[in-house]
Image (cartoon, rainbow, N blue to C red; front, side, top):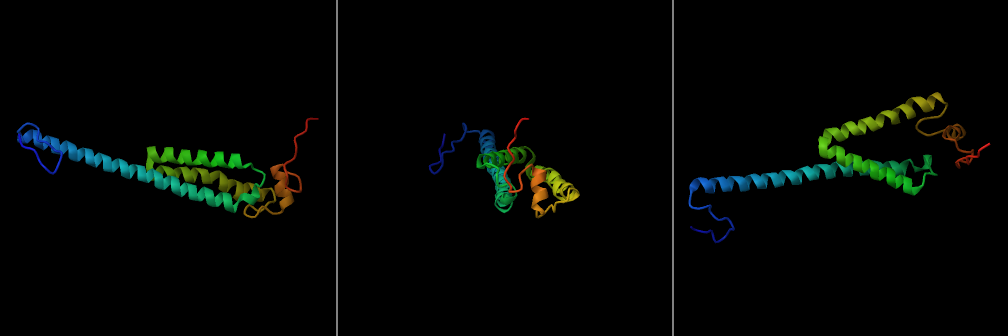
Amino acid sequence: MTTFADSNEQPCFSSHRLNSALVTVRAYNRCVELARRRYNGRVLIDVTVMAAFLLAGNILFHHFDPFLPLSRRIIKTAAALAATAIVSHYFGHIGVVILFGIILVPLIYVHGIWLPRNGVNGWTGEPREKYYALRGWTSTGSPQSKQHE
C-alpha cells in the first residue's frame, strides 16, 4: 500500500475502483460544504437587508409613535428578523420578498386608504389632533390613561 506524502488521502486497499469511489465521496462532501456556506450566506443577506429596512423605519418614523417603549421596539425588531431568517432558510430570497410584500399590504391600506378616509394625511400624520384622536392619545400626544368608570 502506498501513501501520499503531501496529503492525508490514503488509497483504499489497492483497488482502483475503491480509490475512485473514495475520491468521488470526498469531492461530493466538499460540494455539500460549499453549498451549505452559500446557503447560510443567503440567509445572512436576507436578514441584513431586512435589518436595514427596520433600522431606517425606526429612525425615520419614530416621531409617529414616540411613546412606544424601547423594549417593545426591540422585541418587534427581533421577531421580524427571526421570521425573516426562518422564511429565508425554508423558502429563499423569493420567500422573503413575498413576506415583505405581505407586510406592505396592511401598511399601504392604512396609510393610503384608512387614514385619508378619517381625515389624516397618511404620509405626514397631519392634522395632528385627528391623528392623535385616532391613536387614542391626548392633544399633546401622550397616551390617555385608561380609567374605569
